[in-house]
Amino acid sequence: MADIRDIEIIAPNFKRRLSGVTSTIIQLIPVQRALGQKIAVLGPGLPATLPSIRFRDLIHLWSAPAGRSCRIWHARRNVEMLPAILLRDLLRMKVRIVFTSASQRRHTAWSKFLIRRMDAVIATSGKTAAYLDVPNSVILHGIDTKRFHPPADKAEAKRGLGLDSSKKHVGCFGRVRHQKGTDLFVDSMIALLPCRPDWCAIVAGRATGPHLAFEVELKDRVARAGLADRILFVGEHTNIPDWYRALDLFIAPQRWEGFGLTPLEAMATAVPVVAADVGAFAELIAEGSEETGLLVPAGDLKAMVDGAAGFMDDGARLAVAGANALARAAKNFAIEGEAHAIGAVYESLMR
Image (cartoon, rainbow, N blue to C red; front, side, top):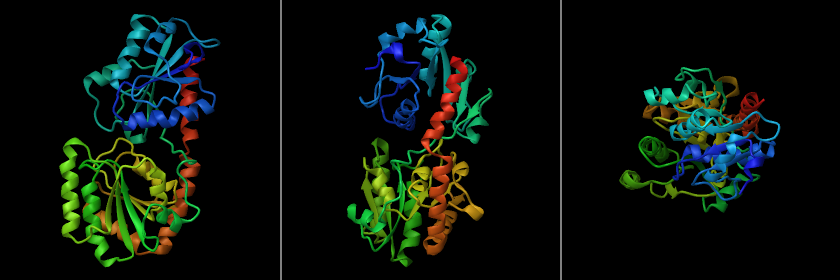
């Protein structure tokens, strides 16, 4: 438990279930701390290893930390903006509010009301910024390049997961559901693999609640195609970087996405990406002379099949794009860069 008197930035998390927002907090906080940002979390659903404060500690927000004019409250959801507004405007506590938006849709009237009352707003992509009616800073998410990195020996990386090291592997990682386009990936593999015996496919991720039947139907579809031994459903894993290191190509088939970190995770592991043009993918993936992958229209199965085939059938292109992907991820998307940029927003408010 952190001492509130030593904390300058509060990162609330008011949702128990793991989500992309929660994952962002979990990954960012240790990096921000390492950079000297005095930050702690507040709320449930977070690892005990993160520095945290209690709700009763909020009484100390009437006084500012030493050498500062206020504390920062960094909200990422509506439910986290509202209490901060009450603390600042009703109770007159010394707090200023930062909001990060990842939404790529029109905001509701309620969301707009809250966002207009922020002291600073961060957009996670240019597409997200286009939906905001207030001044904002675009700060793209970064990736932990110490956690996601290429293997020393790809064949050994495959064998370590029980995979056939003589085969190439194409993967689709994330929650198994229609929105994530898992069915598009499966259908593209059913089209591609029969005439490419040197390739196998991996679906890594979990189906929950109403999506369980969707997963069962996909597995049945694979079995009917006679590909159950080559399109593998491996479930959810805590060692997901190891699975990226076993891949030769990654597919991001989402129909909709707020930001989407999986292409960056693949790129940081030197794996090229074929991705639907959703979320921030167009801002992550490079085409042309420094190709790291390919963008295809969302929901377009034929374009996905053709795009994947172009890499699967050209080993030289696959290798060059993988090297380019690694270089681009390391140069532009290291999580330390994201943390530095967010820290600059904090500093501008606390000075």
